[in-house]
Image (cartoon, rainbow, N blue to C red):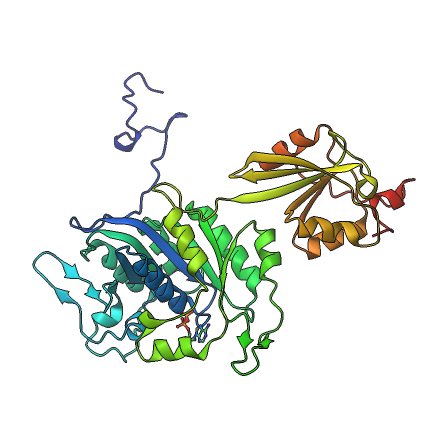
Length: 408
Ligand code: ADP
């Protein structure tokens, strides 16, 4: 450090060991007359999974609860929000700024379709221009006292969504998936993007989960069985809602009458969003249940024959509850199902057989082996990110049966 250092690296040309490069801040200021309390991004891996439908329905659900609600349609190349709300008029530039259009029930909406002369023309812009338009929806539009703003994000995790996340103060994202997608890959990408951007993930919404026959009420899994619960566990996320394929929803969108939708699917999610306070947008918090295979207080070497499971409930990486459950017995394939049914996301043990590890993994439950010492310390170390699995499987030792290798 030079003698004359005044700690202002940005205006100094010296290269010294203490130099601190300024973090580039890409955030954009909202219009000076805007006031938006909560901004929630709705993302999906690809187009057509129902992201815009979920965005619209969530806005309607929060509006029905009495909140002043808005939708910023950032899906510039596939804007479908105005159609779902039956909005035909164009947005007007006033002396104070660009004004959103109010839907029939008072939801404020801004979309590229409200600005283009001919909304059937495709938007064939390159990424930076699209991202620029979305930024302007934030900086140039007067969003007046909005309690909840929902952003219908462009699909995928490419350049445009990244720029949008950098520029707008997104409090949390909701990931919409459908069973025909490569859900695991999409969720993994979205999780990584959110981590890079430091944005909390509120949870997953599964759309088109099934079709319920209106005549016989039988449920048909048109796109096959859902593995959303397994994926949610793997990434420690909540499944916030599951929507069926319902022709009435498609018809409501087509006719511009989404504000009249009738169904309970998003009620729990809307209640959760309502409960979030100023600083917390995590519906239900980041929860986790950890089972430590134990001999009383201590981590056991032999998973299958442990005396008891010390179960720890954690919220936001802190243990909030602990209980002890005796090992219910050692029958083939039983313990993974038992722990799964208890809602366990992570199992910690000293040793475990490969068969047991496979079954846990299939169920989306993380397995940590090689742990030792006090059970609660092991859970705490796991939550702090300090306890990693050694991956060692008991193959040959004397107690192979006790590790659950053969007896599961
Ligand atoms: P995205 O925003 O992901 O591109 P949309 O929300 O525009 O997808 O949905 C694509 C089409 O599928 C729309 O016509 C919409 O009405 C329809 N759709 C989406 N989800 C459902 C559903 N659960 N039941 C019936 N139709 C649906």
